[in-house]
Length: 515
Ligand code: AMP
Image (cartoon, rainbow, N blue to C red; front, top):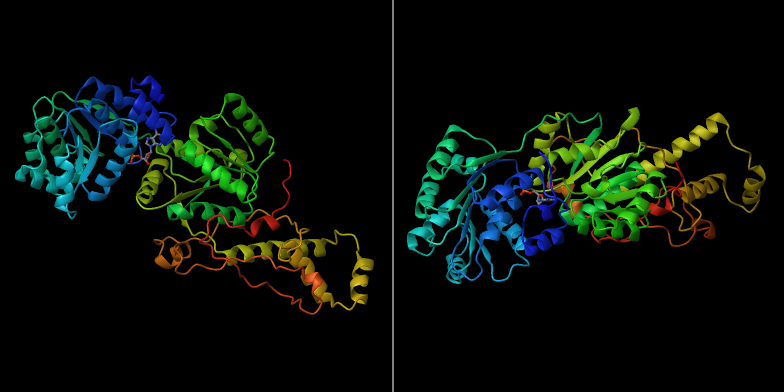
């Protein structure tokens, strides 16, 4: 199904502004298909998964139908759980940001009646709730549906599975006959079809095909990371693997800008691409990226369309794309021409379920990885460095530096001290600015763990077990003839919790090279 621009869908300026503020660049397939049908006023049965953008697909036309001067419930959204009700309500709040006089409230069990009563009496026009609590309010007479224009059943199949059939039927029977009825359901069982037949009029069906798209042979990983630690997690992954060329995808322009700024602040060579950037500037950025003039391109799907860069080492999904086909397009940019490629996806909470869906959709495995700790990153770098030195020693491919070494020996340094100092320099652990070394591409991705991430594993992000982040020695080791101790430097310094603190990575990263 084709995607469209939002401004071609006949929407109000206020909605277009809200959508732009959210950073949505174009409508997803379900939005492109459902919004015009709903704006026409038809009943609709939508079949699409969570993550397809279905919330905006049914919310946008419903919001457009609300009369701001009428202080009565005009739109009712039924959801199976309080979490979903809250999410839908939050998206509706964002979509109504530029509409004056329209408010929305979530109504679910377990929350205070008083607050809900207050909101309902105030004349809120959009109510998003779970069937049980909505029935309570209907029976008490505190929820009136006589002015209802649109009723939406989100995840209708799940609500039936949860035993809400009678409540749903009663709610629908209390609504005016001429209202618009919208069903969203992942499956269409006989029970669902009965419900639709009984409570809607000649509904149009919009189904997003689940094309089986085979993902290219790419190592796919996902990492469970709390949203506020995503940037740090991303930097660790890049450090650990020593990546030097990759695309990082975000879902919104705002996120692209924030992440690109954060990466630049951390010393990465990065640039950005999104629909809010002029075409001339986009072309410049793309050309630079093709010529490997910077390492990481942070982009939205729309802006990165058509980018063809053969030697990408990694594609990182900073956000999971709303459309599974976009996932396939994104990750397909790495691993080209028989090269090894890696796709890493950062997820949390509800998005974890989408990973299972993506696995089915792509008929491929997406393995759970663990974000490496600072110690593991250091260990990795040391291993790589030793491997390099060993290789040079074994092949004898170096020019003798005997006279320089002799100088230091004559000054009274031990040979082990000299070697340690040189290795520390290469590992960036001396505080001197000379250190640069080329990490080799890792042979395999991070260690694997198929079980769910435990509190412990996530603890490092949460602070309880926050490891200390190594920092460089204040004084150059050379300067401290007596104080210099060979061997690995102890990790010390500030906690990982602090966002964007100066990382230890850049001292080690090789200067950016072309090609
Ligand atoms: P949903 O299927 O409603 O659960 O939406 C999944 C996610 O996609 C939500 O986080 C939305 O914010 C996001 N989203 C919805 N529509 C778009 C769009 N047109 N472009 C980018 N992201 C979107």
